Amino acid sequence: MCAVVGSTWPFVVARVVVGLGAAGMIATGLGLLAAADGDGRHRSTSAVWWSAAMGAGIALGPLLTGVLDLAGAWRWFYVGLALAGTLLYALAGRVLPVEPPAERARRLDLVGFTLLTAFLALLVTAIVQVRAGGPVLAAVLLGGSGLLLVALGLSQRRPQRLVDPGIFTHRPFLGATIAGLGTGLGIIAASSFLCTVLVRAVGLSTFQAAGVLAAWSGTSALAALALVRHGPRIPGRVQLTAGLVGVAVGLVLLAGVGDPVSAWRFVPGLVVCGCASGLLNAGLARQAVATVPGGLAATGTAANNTARYLGAAVGISVASVTAGTDLLAGWNRVALLAAACSLLAALAVAWLSRGERAPGVAGAPTGSWRTAAE
Image (tube, rainbow, N blue to C red; front, top):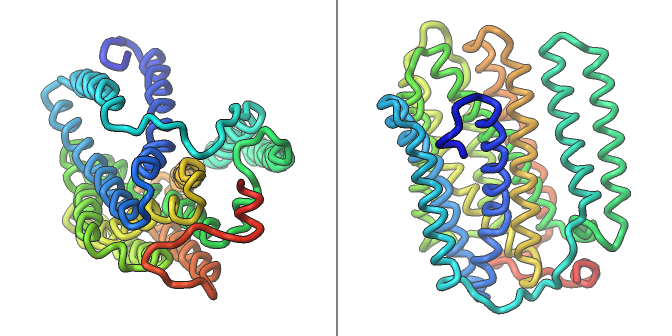
């Protein structure tokens, strides 16, 4: 659809469809890996490869689209994605396990899904309305999002729900979820906004901006690959805490720019963010499956990725409001705010990890939480 439409609104609708498909892949991809291999150490290694592939895609995708855009052939990128998706669909039955999952199948919680979506939509709209200069409407929308959040919490007491609330009483899982939220509010939101800064304030083309951002995303993929052999020896909570702190340091290095500014000014901070992101993404993928019982791997990965992209949606909206009209000065505020979010998430993970055992690979939780989750 994206490749053939000729006007804006059909293209937006097509992109929504693409987003729904991407959400399905992101939410279930790591769960499928976990189901394919029950060995804890192999799961950890698979999680690292998964995070490295994500980083490589984020690095190469913008570069490829930038080249095609320069050639006036951007539609071919969507054609390529469609063909690749068709090929993967044909191969999936050959490489993925066909045994029924250990987790008991549940019906989709349409009530919870609707409330969660409406909450996020109202919250983001309220944030954007602040920039539009409508404080009264923004306050009304913010109040409405709060009511929807309360309704969402109440709806999860029903047997048919998005996720068992008891899962969040397990501190390692809660820490991993907060780390995912901090990742969205921090580096994902900041890097998304930085692309706008590079194009509109620094004067780069989309291809050049993608090349600069590859100093973060490409380094992230390489850093994750470096952890394939040694990553399982590092406790997951250390990966999360150190990754978030490293991202905060890199974002601080990215702040303090003035006019005029060279694109090279951003590279050192992006490299630091990339190294830390590789450690962080590998830790997120690993902890999402390691902090839940084996039969709930899909739940763990879905919850972690939902937290990450909820944070990104809110973070990007806050960044647009925080920046204002002066993009370079606004970028300095955005970078420092994103660094603060990353650091707060790191502190939360460290606090939740108090007294936790330090195995190379976290074991399945036990006790009342496991009973509640089952």
